[in-house]
Image (cartoon, rainbow, N blue to C red; front, top):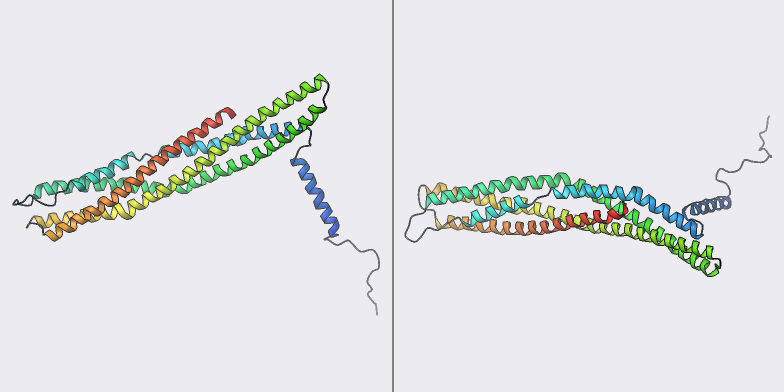
Length: 316
């Protein structure tokens, strides 16, 4: 019978390898990566690295941030609240003008009441159309707008990190220059060090400009979030308070008109209609206040986005 023996020759190395060798190789790779990311400590190499970083920011990232800003600015400029504001005030005026109580000793003024009710109905339908358009547009565009703001703030954060790295290199460069200035005796060497220092100051100024642009982007994003939140709040008021109150008042007015053709409206019916008008006035007051707040925020956002464009001009 043949016996199978375990071979005694050298075995193949394990696929996992020696743990100590693996950790050594990992450390070597990390050191290599660090040597690529961080320039050597000479002042000239630090200045060159900061210059290269700045060129990448100004050449690619600043224009990309500008494109996103421009898309947001164009979108925001198209939100005109003036017509919606006028429609809400028109319904306020029309409902306030309805006279539910005739003069003492006189018959119910049916013709005038019909005219006043017609004005309320026209104003309510106009506001309803504009409100539906406003709510629909916000629902359709809000997700795209949020994505644009997310893109803007991510680009700004990425640029900010690079700016901080560049400023750190320039601080190291200044320390290196201070050491070399103390040791330099030849006039040529001193002039070269001075020129390198001036170059570092120019780079630092440019990086601070990029940093200011990133700060303006963060401020714009904060305002953009507020605008989105208050647009949503106005949509809720229009849908959940103004529209139901408007429909209820119109229904009460129609019921009064139908009854008034046969006889004088009952006081209880008149009180119900008066309460409905009051509820509409309260809802409209809240909606108008929200709209005015939103208008102020939109104006601030427009100014902030324009300020971003100004901040980017020296970097073009």
